[in-house]
Amino acid sequence: MENLYCLRCNRELEPGDKSVAVYMFAQTVGIRPRQKSAAKRIGFCPQCAVSLAMGPPPEGALNLAAWEMIRELVSSDPALNEAAWEALQGFSRLLSSNRVETNLRAAVKGYLEF
Ligand SMILES: [Zn+2]
Image (cartoon, rainbow, N blue to C red; front, side):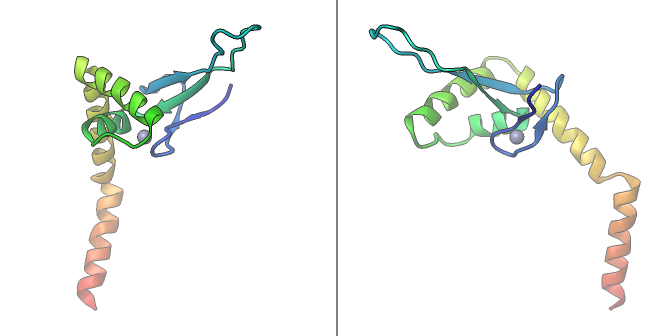
């Protein structure tokens, strides 16, 4: 199974992780035989999806099309926003864990002693 990474922040999206997938394939129209490319899957973590949707429109027709779809998802239901919020909360909890705090205190102490 291929590993999927967030296209924006390069975070690994493991199976079972919440994410937004954008599927893309190309197909000939009005040409025989009809040809179809393999489908490509592009992933975004919830934080990046919400951040992209809240941000200004990107340049390029394909980017704009993907941005409009992500905006549609983000604005139609708060579930994606909640997933981003949960991930962010987990991250700040990690930052305030004792070990980091002790290191920070040591760093501040070291700085003050100079
Ligand atoms: Zn991301």
